[in-house]
Length: 161
Image 1 (tube, rainbow, N blue to C red):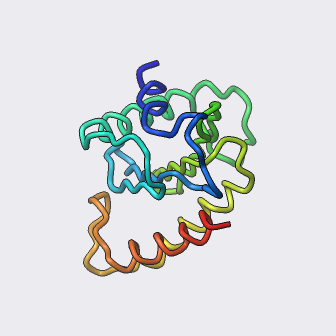
Image 2 (image 1 turned 135 degrees about the horizontal axis):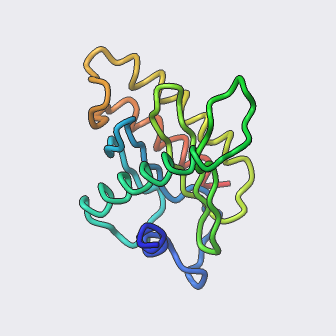
């Protein structure tokens, strides 16, 4: 339950006016559950400490691992999946897990359509700007100006709709 509390305090309440906002934040977690990237895309969000984000990443990773075992029915040619979507009255969490175990957590407005397409586009940018960067070490925090610039530009376009 504490992980849900952490998520709820980090996003605007229903009373906070949101004009054309789509994407609140992005968190990327490596296959070991470590936080490798975090970015807010909306002004006015409650700020969490770095430790809170580290706890959030580790907690989500653990819950995701447990939920992969709780799913009794999955297609035989697909690996079991954990939490993919979580919706509250304050936000929607879309989780996209890569084949290598990296998790992309996208926080958007509740009932926001096409979040799977948005997170897939973010993954494309990640593949182009992070994974193709010869100076990036796998599983380490992401520090890439090209990635940051392109991601922020894409999210501004989405948030201005």
